Amino acid sequence: MRTRPGRLPLAPLLAVLLAGPIHAHEWVLDTKYRDRFNAQEWKEQSILVFEAGESQLIPAMQAVEAAFKGIKVFSLPSMGQDGSRIHVELGVRGDPAQVEPAMRQLRELVAAAKFPYK
Image (cartoon, rainbow, N blue to C red):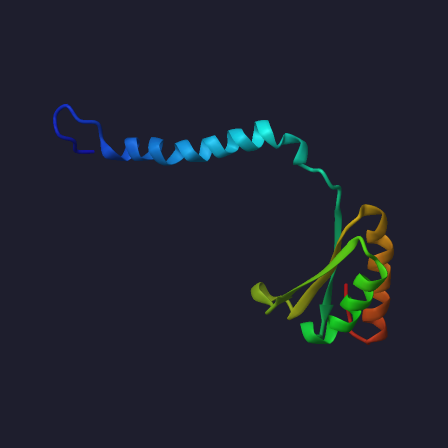
């Protein structure tokens, strides 16, 4: 690294100046807001649904969210990279006590719509 005599290299100085605010934010979070970390417990489960588009799964997603107030339903489509089949990852997250029954209902609704899943 080239510098002029009597001067510090610019890269280390920039690193210190840029990292300073990041560390200050971490300190504030760690000391002032520690009680808010992991304030809510949650759990997540999902299945892979084949031969269905996300829009075809919306009624099942809405039914589960309506039946379980502590649950959020999510979907993530995949175009089948790495040789896997095209699918939608469909699942629930939220209140640990509600995840199992919500997932059971979601599986039943997917099966009733005749979409294969695993």
